[in-house]
Image (cartoon, rainbow, N blue to C red; front, top):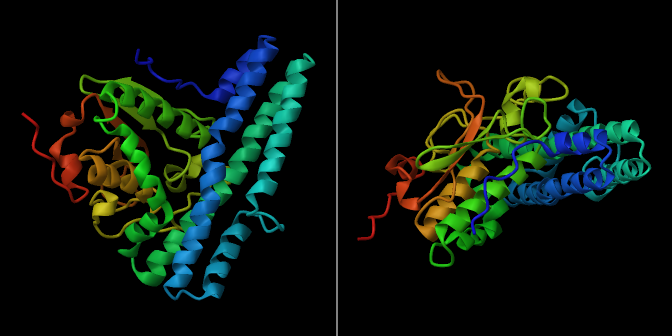
Length: 329
């Protein structure tokens, strides 16, 4: 049986609701879920940063230029203490808050448990956003030093080992209806873990349409956040001054042939669409990214999962440099 729609309510809300109701077991379960949902960012951001550094150095960007850019961004973030980019060290702080929140739950101290859940959210947001900002800074540096067209290849280098994961959604392996359920559930969990929404609690919306399911992130907590002042604790968008992160100035297959796309958002085009089309013949998710600095800006993002791959429109293929395959008779 195919599962129903995934959880879209923020896990932080569910945790605090359980705590307020005096349900210690549910409160603990939700606190642990928060850590599970953060795993994607915890595991991938350090990889992105390390591979981005290597890419820059391998192509002749001086090591001092790379390290100076990281120091500049960390200084803007007020994160100049040693270990600011040591994920195990930073994650230990988040885990310690989770442990204390669980203990307060079991002790029946609802007020302390609820406060600690909020501390946990704030601590993870600070770590998450710092690592995301450094990733964005390195890709912006590449565009400035090596030219914007290099960004697509840079993301291939950073996430190419994830491309075979698209094969799990091959209709020859399992019914597409089962894949749809997985794609929806994974997307919801991922975007909760990235703390989507203007309040940064993991807010997402999901709407069923005749041909597809549509997620809306307003904004997502990673790339979309960089374009929005209201989604950052310091009230500063990462495009424009003082951060100066770049968006696409030209049109590229790896960025939906769209100007104004955050260079971090490019990885969704590569993974969700271009790699999927290359391996399967269709995109697993179709993305409408946020756009900044154009005549028609868009400050939110949508992901569509079609109920049948053949329903994906021709335009979704064209804008990433592909042709829609002929429908099988």
